[in-house]
Length: 247
Ligand code: G3P
Ligand code: MG
Image (cartoon, rainbow, N blue to C red; front, top):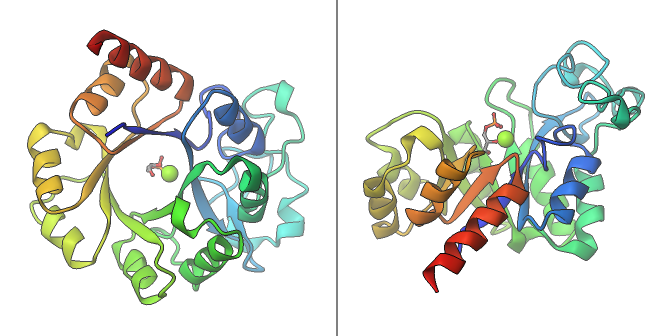
C-alpha cells in the first residue's frame, strides 16, 4: 500500500491556500490529491476557503455566509500571500471540480461546518460530486461528526471520514458506528498502535498536517493510508527516497 499524498489546501506553502494557483501547483508537483475546505455563501454557493471569516486570506472582512458569491468574487484572495498572486479569486467547488475533470486527482472535501452549521451543506457538496462524476474519487471529512453521518443518509455512497485533533478512547468504535471509511487525525495523535487498531477495524488512518521529512517519513512508515501536506513536492521526494532505499 502506498501512502496517498494530498496537497493540503493545495500546495499552500508556496501559493495562496485554497486557490486555483495552489491547486495547479499541487498538480504540477505531482500530488495524488487535493484537500480543500468548503464554506457556504449567503446564496448557498459552496466556496473554497478555510476560515469562516474573510479577514486572513482575502482583502475583505466579515463572514463568508453574509456575502453572495458575486460579492465574494470581487475580492482578492492572493495578495496576502504575495503580490505575484494579485487578483486571485476565491474558487467555488465547481471551479475545482471543472478543473479536475481532465486531471482526475483524488479529492478530500472538508466541510467547514463545525463553527457555523451551514444548512444543507452535505447535500449541496454530494450533489456536486455526483454531477462531476467525482463521487468515487472523493472522501468527505468534517470536525462536525453529526454532519458526516448525514452523508450516510444522503445515499450517494460517497466515502466519508471522521476528522479529529483530539485524543479520544472512543475514536475507533465511534468511527465504525457511523460507518466512516477512515479517521483523519492530527499528526501528534499518530502511533503504531492506533494504525493497527484502526486497520483491524477496517478503518484507514490519514494524518494532517505533515510538512517535514521526519513527520512525512513517519506517516509513511507507520502505514498511513494518506497524508496531508502543504509541501507535496517534498512529500513525494521523501516517498521516492524511502522506496529507493528499500530496493
Ligand atoms: O483535513 C485535514 C485538515 O485540513 C484539518 O484541519 O484546519 O487545516 O482544515 P484544517
Ligand atoms: Mg482542511
